[in-house]
Image (cartoon, rainbow, N blue to C red; front, side):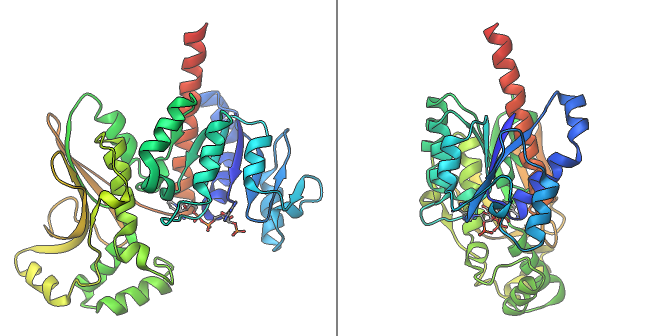
Length: 345
Ligand SMILES: NC(=O)c1ccc[n+]([C@@H]2O[C@H](COP(=O)([O-])OP(=O)(O)OC[C@H]3O[C@@H](n4cnc5c(N)ncnc54)[C@H](OP(=O)(O)O)[C@@H]3O)[C@@H](O)[C@H]2O)c1
């Protein structure tokens, strides 16, 4: 499997590390032989049809140089779109920064990959939040696979759990704590009686929150994940504008105290059911509810017709964790391609 990696930041590096670390094992266990033939970032690319050495690239980047400065295979200034179009590969792994205004540059990268017959794995919520129904249709039209398990739950397989493990059952409703930053802030406020502002400052110091924290604290990040779950698991055709969204800015210590007196606390919950609009809002839940996780953890609960309540808990972010979701998607595509070949013989 020849792979073009677009974006070489925290997740991109996690992908090259994870592919290099377990290479022999993956060939032995899955017959999976991945080869990164190009890496493109904002300044250019490195391209080698025979495969790139991740160790060498990491060393270049650690010394503070651009990857396109590689003396043998570097191509400074070449846009990622040209790399996707011109380099022969089976899969594009798209891991550029999220943008929920117009989903660029990822939206163009993904559509170019589809139109040139390449499967796509992404961890970028932007294109899915704004255009998921259109993108899944375009992938089908071009007969390619589109996988995005790292967009919800980081390395925790929330999408696969619902899609595969609960296949055959009917999922009636989904509720989740899908954003670690807001969960950290609410946990700090309720357990340590810290003000919202101080908890946010702590989260920023620890690297959990961005300098511009709106994406997390105003509930946009959770809303993006609700869109992905709604489309992929609940078969709804929705985008970000269809989600009723309230963030956590107005959650007060007093409200948390009141909730606590009843054995409850307040969490930012994303929820989807059969009838109502998908919603993101601060919600009171019992402290002994399995969904009620602390700190930066994420949790998701599926209410199903036959198997009852199922809750999955795990880390919702992190470079290597999210890269493990990319590997999961690559293996899934490899499996699907192998089945296609069997069916065609
Ligand atoms: N980090 C996590 O824990 C996590 C978890 C789940 C999902 N995600 C999602 O995964 C994606 C990647 O996250 P990250 O943490 O790896 O981000 P990051 O560290 O900021 O890396 C992004 C990479 O994309 C490159 N890039 C920016 N604009 C580009 C363009 N126009 N063309 C090509 N490359 C471009 C950047 O290059 P420069 O460095 O040169 O600007 C950088 O190499 C994001 O969408 C994020 O929301 C991240």
